[in-house]
Length: 507
Length: 123
Image 1 (cartoon, rainbow over the protein chains, first blue to last red):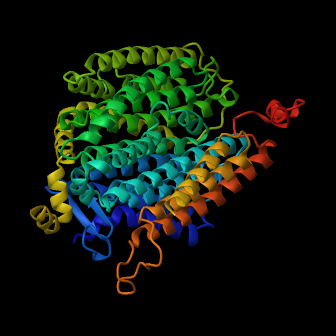
Image 2: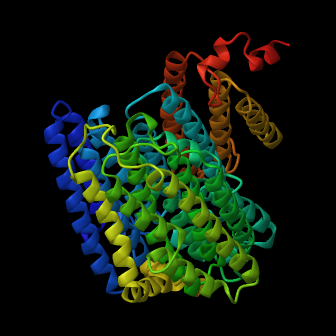
């Protein structure tokens, strides 16, 4: 058994413990260790991505218990893709945070690594209850990061965020209980085998459990009608935390792919069909709500938050189709939207810092380094709205292409095209207010950080440019990822091995 | 026994959901606790309700499923930690903003005469 498979979970756990126990008095040491560990994490994730390319999903049996009885981690192409995305994003965000944000409160670095532990664990695990536990680890750390720096407004928003997620956790437990009561297993591969064998009388209970579970994932992915927590929470969070949170909504999306596409899909696909029939309309409404929210926003941060809501709507449309050809385009859009959302949160912070008292309000006013930020805003806005030639355009094109054959094709096309126009209007309006109408002025606040934060933002934007330039090879890769993500038999064979062979022979 | 356990879970959940709808932080925290009690009982019941059968192979003729009990233990630990966190959070929020309302109203709303929600609750 390859011991490196568990490294993405062990490394942040150890780093966080060392940071909080041994290094809590020295910020400089914390920064060094934290940056080093994150860079190492990127290397490990890249290595695992390379290893997983070779073929079958690789199970990691914790404590060497045989598969359906112990907890199992599964490393396959989908999970390593997500791991790599999370690690790269974390590195950029951390470099940004090291330039001052981490000194505004205590334990930023420890919380950051606990957050990574939760995220990586959720991507790795092959057990539904373990998924719940990693969700909780991720959320506890995110509560800490969100409150980093304190303040009454942040505490109020934090209370709402924590309450909403605690309700989500309770519902998650109800769902897990129902699924366990019907199938008698929580291992994802074993569930994939058992779900089609559930008796007709228990089907309704299983569907109820699956629907509750869908509700929880949709809450994390901020889909209408469970989207309202996101603009409040992300607007109150510190900028680097909000940028890292860009991956949290994608954990919800990943769980939908994994649990509903692979595990509960079953032979008749009953539960996937149920989930899809709920997901696609909700995603279309989310897109509309997010786009309208950007028009109504009075400051840049709210605008970005609602744009994130809209992008989650766009992302969930191809995922809700549950077809592997649609999933490839969806994954491309997932990479793009994560990177661009993080970039925009950092951009808002930079703009607000360079305007002093005006902050990020959408009103003309003096700003330092205006031409530079205007250029970066232009690139970010073009990518997010989905104008050619950047990655948002490619992603939306792939989604439109794959949804053409689906039943809701007309609605999907209408929603994506009209919402792109609305987003374009909103971003053009805010850009012209912030950068065009306000002349660069000497009266702008003079104190300033170095060039590193701007370089971080530019690096994230360079990633979207790279995603656009190498769209062909990236899509070929993601197509194979999507292919494997939908291969139920391969997954079950890899995890359960001979056990499942014996069982399906007996049944 | 099934009726008793089922209605117990149902009443706890209903009370929890009702309290979650309140406007002040204290009832919301109590509501979350009640919900977590309800889900713990529910998880326990997923191993089927039987009496006098320890979950140890060999100690009884037909041992019950031990897994739900392990799940309940994990859930209890997590919900305990979360309750502690949200209590601290609501207390800090109250001390810093001077109001214990759940929504994003500013302290001025409360300071400017009678708080509308408070007057409503009194009525």
